[in-house]
Image 1 (spheres, one colour):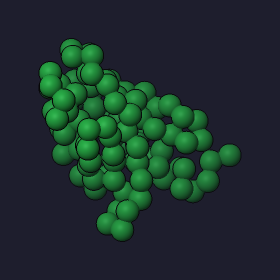
Image 2: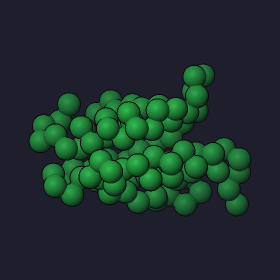
Image 3: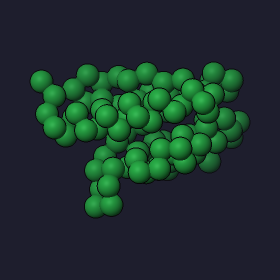
Image 4: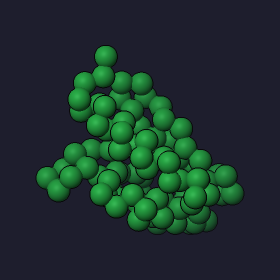
Length: 91
């Protein structure tokens, strides 16, 4: 059974996932009771796993190659993911 922390994390990941199609990205929630968001760019084939974690300043999203975004600014985070996964070179 999911606790409050897990429900909140899932809610943040779901909110981000809703914006990703506008950025040309595809996503899928994985991990069951420890949810993460698997995101990929169909054009480049690049993919990453998004973690959501609470911080002193609110919830943040983290992904490979130093990617970071705020749950308080989902549109900026979605755009940063598009830039990361749409690039043909790693940052």
